[in-house]
Image (tube, rainbow, N blue to C red; front, side, top):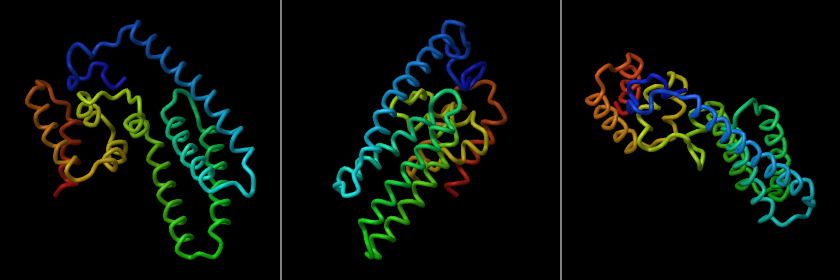
Length: 202
């Protein structure tokens, strides 16, 4: 969808064929099927956790739930129910961790900060572009990063840029300018978005 008739992408990649669409749908279905199988296993393990479970087991479960949320955010179809279920499981795990922390104010403060960071991270993942960029099997190839970013909406681009540090933003600006030199008909949206990236460096 991002590449279709988009002059920022290589000409050979701008046309979406029926065969290419069917292959993308097949891969989406495979990814969804694999996720469902893995998520059921994860839920089963979470349900079996004991009140006096070792901290290493609880922390591993928390990490796996975070990864599951990232995966769910990038899947085809509406995954809102699955994401909500993951949030509830994460809340239960965090309550167990808080119980283990007792009255340790330093530990409790760190847990508060971690929960705020997780909430912000989950909010970013509501943007499909962010979910795609964070996926281990990202559909956004490195060579297509700039065309993808410059084709995004203002809201999506702002969210995606939160993933990059200052040095990376500088590199993105350089890559954007280089891309413009190779593009005959630069979309107005792309010109606007490169300015948005540059403004973050001002």
